[in-house]
Image (cartoon, rainbow over all chains, first blue to last red):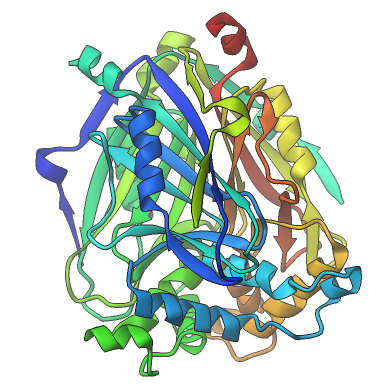
Length: 164
Length: 164
Length: 164
């Protein structure tokens, strides 16, 4: 059952010369070893500073025991997600990775269940998200500083007014 | 065992000024609560309307109980995928999310196993997919309208002929 | 606990006209049916040949029984990942997909646990990866040639010097 719809009138097409990129980083340092944070505001900050009118923002964890994912901002669901990844990739098993002296193999696996990056579309100067979509950071080996990269690409609002 | 190959002769390089973006949305309303749909044709429609010659198309679910993923168009495999995500994230457990009155926590988890977005590369005016790659929508809380976003970025076919 | 940081001084912004794309393919033919390979060097090769200064490189498996993911280059962890996906999606079950004559339904599922593509950010002419991030190929039905696509988009180093 498929039905096509023109979004808000009609599809949006832009042909503009001044594509640009904008790159920023955010340090996250969670209080708990496992923690889920809503980072949508950080993504919107980057969009605003980039004056991005249309395009993409990559949001990607730069550490391999953390996730970036899109889901509901609801604390009960966040606990469900934490319980669920614990069931999927339990801490305390005899992982080969621990023969190197590490103790966080489960965190490396948990982060893969949820994924480590998302692309956020931007349209008409706004994060183009569905009604309940929020961008989250999932930490599985926290209590120390971790970086995420936010990289925007597309025409700026300046370009848009020129294009009009 | 790695072997490098020039694709169809040589790598493709384009230096063109008229990058553009093109954004469209599709409403999907599945008959069943759980359903898998092949949406490759929708992606190709957007590529054609955008006249995209080279670049990327983001295909992303805008609802948090649905997936977008790439796999084989084979109904047996689709049932395997549905059985598998049911095993991974069963319906009917006592999820915390259900204390809010919701009953679909399992759908929020199932969608994360499969992922909620893909980037489809476009080369020489075609979706640059492998022999069996097809783009799918996986619904886990359907029977109501849900949106996906398709956003293309890159030079148009017009740009290509100019570039020649 | 969020703390923002300007990366290496300040966010990077580029406004440049000569965006370009560059597309290449790599054939991987693993010795074993299941194998994990570090393919970061291939991604860096494409970045260098594209002279990409800033932007994105899509790295995507073109076969539906293989993965592309980011994790640690550590052979113990690689075995953990292989054991883990085997537990998540075991070989030898009675999958519906096998009624077509295929025997690799588990490989189709394993590849979805790890994902089939990543976007690698490029900043200042380098893959912008965290300290332990390495790009990997995960094969679950190997011993035959498989392709991955690497597609770069963004301004070239030439553009950068023009922009200065």
